[in-house]
Length: 396
Ligand code: LMR
Image 1: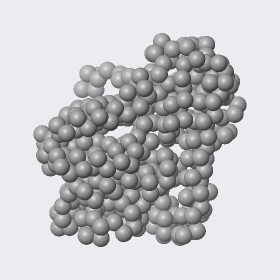
Image 2 (image 1 turned 90 degrees about the vertical axis):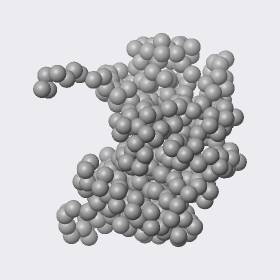
Image 3 (image 1 turned 120 degrees about the vertical axis):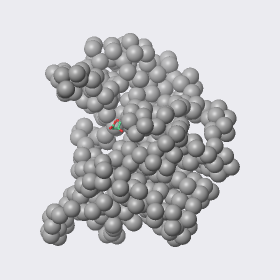
Image 4 (image 1 turned 30 degrees about the vertical axis):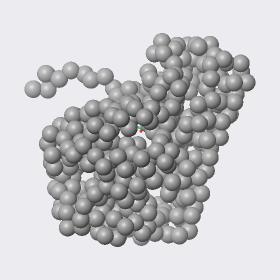
């Protein structure tokens, strides 16, 4: 039977990792996958996470199954982090948060939940969106459509067009948003625009689903959750897929959470049982290690303070790199305007290069980006930035 299967091309983002690893050039740069890197090019283990690991080693008494809910303390701490400690929907018992294997696990279980609730529901995603969104939702049997989002000419948000398109959505539609640090384009609505989007969702009755993968990487933990909090305040139902991969730098530990807001507490309890049945059918029980670390950090005032400092440090480094890149590209005499790099936020921006130029960067200069010319800003450092700018100049 398996003889009927043919090889599948690697996911474009994951393919870059392999191609970069195989390149012997000492000057090679991997601008592909979205992992934070420090000045040495390493993706560090946060000090808060190391401390939590020591505590875990000393205190963990069993590796027995966690049960479908995962670590209950993690779920409630994540809910506070996402919705705010005293959010009204949480206090009303209308929010349920369930640990998932990474943000991707949350997206998939969220998609399964939508499919279970309304098999014909459509999901609307920004154009463009994270490459894996195009795969996850159809894999769950949902149709994925797009709404206008990024203006590649102006490197900015097509806000009016987005609002016009979303005003045609209604009950039976799920609209997917990136809460902050839009992946791949780095452009987010401002607070007034989010307010208008949340009003529109409430007015039109579509269900907002929020991908919160970079909380703390754009402005702050609280400000980056603004979209979620506005939707939760104004709309009866919201789905949130959140990730700890980036802000706790626990990528490989697969830590995420699916949160649902329902119109009333009784329904939220019912929906949670549906989530448990979906996870049981899918991966049975969630993983424990990374979640336990986040749980320890968020229940220790000292470790939370340390962790917040580390999140701020990662964000400041990325913002500093954005500014340095924009300034040094201009100083190098490159005519094309790259000042948008400074106005955008988070790990990613599009460089606005053709596939041919991307290929030249890869083949002639060992600089790896996905074909869309999305770059991971955190991959730059003092040692590679000049080489990158020279190479960019050569292909422009
Ligand atoms: C990315 O977009 O590079 C990250 O979200 C990592 C991934 O899994 O694709």
